Length: 118
Image (cartoon, helix red, strand yellow):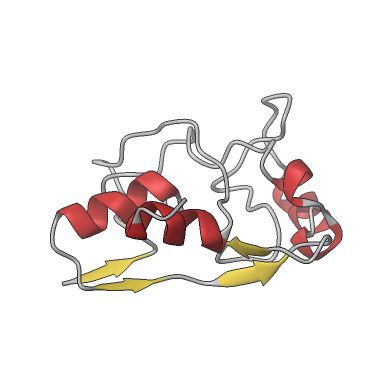
């Protein structure tokens, strides 16, 4: 079974809960994209910016499509990136997805959880 961006049909895409759920359901292949943050960390994200379809600003405001690319992950630190909520917005394409607060994880966070490494 293929876990595209985790288990995005059930949980917010490209988040730790979505990847873990996909493996719990038997996915033996996970598809994900990564971006290098402004401080040189490997961040799991499909786009190199904060998508208006997926993310809310740290203060809870929505992101206008016209300015979403100004939230460029290549220019932001991981600390800044992880203050955005990329899980609470409902996704019309995935009506069974459970909206829940989530952030864009570091690739190493997923790896540590998956392998139970410290």
